Length: 80
Picture 1 (tube, rainbow, N blue to C red):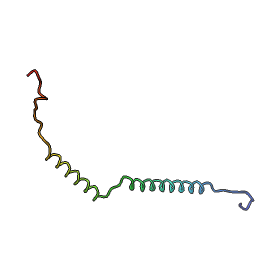
Picture 2 (tube, rainbow, N blue to C red):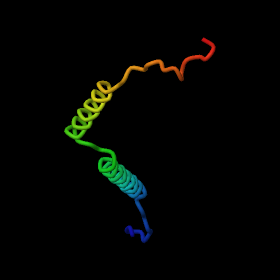
Picture 3 (cartoon, one colour):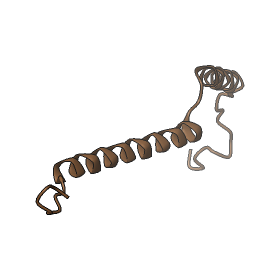
Picture 4 (tube, one colour):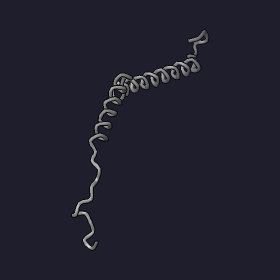
């Protein structure tokens, strides 16, 4: 109370504090979501390189073991 007995509340400060708290809460929520996403989707550079090398090896093996299609009597047109 002030000297005249009236109750005075400084709403400017209260509004600023509320805004600061909301922003801090939003930042904390974003950081929490980012941490969850890093755990869920994140891979290290070494893991990415290892996966790429593995895929390259598998692709190379697949290409080297391919057979050329041959025409068999069963696939030819019977009218010829």
